[in-house]
Length: 64
Ligand SMILES: [Zn+2]
Image 1 (cartoon, rainbow, N blue to C red):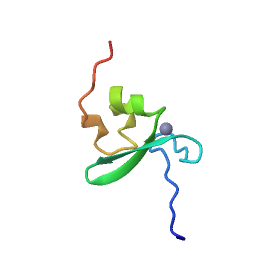
Image 2: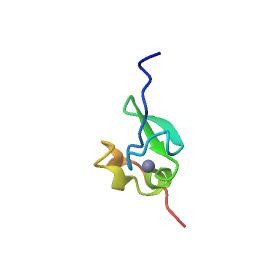
Image 3: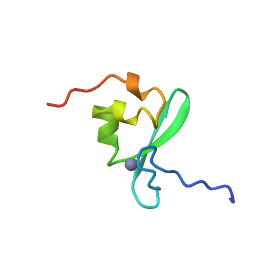
Image 4: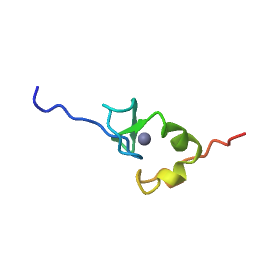
């Protein structure tokens, strides 16, 4: 197929060729985030608010 698409991390923009990417869906849209940025999405989603619209409203999992 000629329409293969390379996905990129929504935070650091590294491609799936360089890092493992995790697929997620939010607001009906698919997104990809790498495993290094995933903890940020979990613990400090507000840091991604300018990259993932609505992330500032995510519930924050407290770090202990
Ligand atoms: Zn990343």
